[in-house]
Length: 186
Length: 279
Image (cartoon, rainbow over all chains, first blue to last red; front, side, top):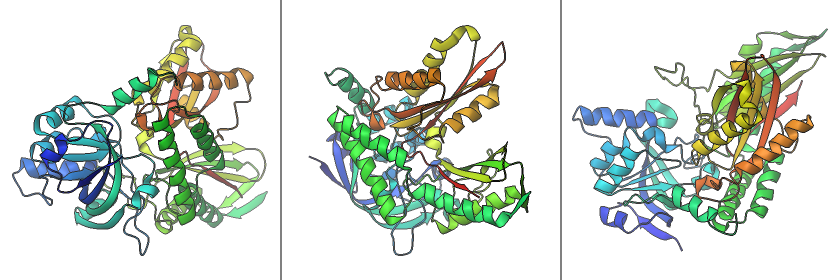
């Protein structure tokens, strides 16, 4: 059974989720990759306003392919998250509650997630065609010059993710592997 | 001497960029289906089934399988009795430019690794030239995503490290990569040569069909053994646990210096793409 999540994604919602939970996200999420994260953190350092409200937001680490005519977006699967480790703690401190990506996260990110309350979701890497079907609308809201790396506001419906790291620091990459290795299936 | 015009190369590269990015090779599809059928861990099997659904959608909609449509790695085998009219490098880059524009593929190349401004057309391609006998031109386009490329490593082992040293290093690279390169992965291993030759061999290993073992029985057996040992690590599809950590492992080897044992491991994700045309 999947947990249904509606945005905004509050810190109370965060606490209900555990590593390994399958979730379906509906509502508004934002895209940002390396270059956009760098610019956001530069704005924060200069005390300037951000192009999106990070409070209770979910940021999807993705750079989609261009949309074909009549389509909302091209293929849009997750990128590897550790490249955002230098930036995520600051955004979490400012109220970001969700991240969608794939792959390991650094200690500094997990500590910020535990301290402030945030969840790290995994989407299935390499399934950009499948995931794009859950994205109904896409609009560039900042940094158009970055092309695929621009910040987009996405409207999603039942976007499938799994909780990889919860707000207590439980980690599916460790749990899942240990569970598998401890069974007769091995 | 046979002659061809370079515009034929441009057209072929354009077609191959689109074809490779939207339609997964049949050998990889067969391998994923076989792994899904044999995967004992239910959660892992579910993920493999979604991966199959994804490439089917890509096939039917002519849509990129993955949003990382990669840097275009272009392998050219040029017959020594063939004359090409026009600049071959420019012809390849023009093909990449057109393929990535017309195919709605992502432009993922920055012009300078430090200052990082996107070139806007996915050029330049990474071109690997090889001279061969004959008067044909074989072109293989292998778009390479960087989630997996970033997890690749090279080691200059000592001859005394031997076979065990090679095996330990390959497994260590896969274990350190864990969930990052979108497992199930395809592992390309280059053994021997020089520092750069080993890396090239590892990349070349990734364009050999996964159902074609190395022609040398010793290396064919090593491929099999290493694959089994990697699939005992438990990383599984997406790193959530399971048997299917790697779909295949291909080794290419080359003679080396008396003092050296270079080993390069180039990782690819389950979207291991390459398409070939002969002109």
